[in-house]
Length: 150
Image (cartoon, rainbow, N blue to C red):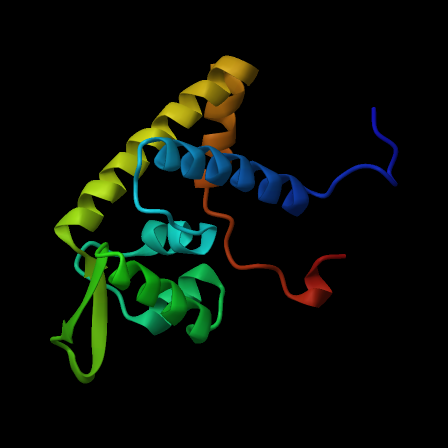
């Protein structure tokens, strides 16, 4: 049992778990000869709607600045994985969506993530993985206000 001073917080553990999946995904994509992408670009792909999403909405979903989201989009557009199209609901905005090559890359990444989840189940057991998934899929509601955490 870890002492209180060495015990990692749940956000730290969740961050490490996310990095485990990202590292496995990026390694598998590299081994397959896929277009190199950054962890930020992987995250962008994960939050992108099939019909397209504005850069502002992508930034909000990723919890990054618009500039960071825009840079990630620009790199993926240059790689031929994303495209910008006019937003039918706003003459001033553009939607970001996957190109056919981006759709293929997204499907490949989803398959790799399924394989990584299976590998995790082999390592720690199917039951803990299923419990983790169930806990993370359960709605948590809004983050508590500062005075309600006591």
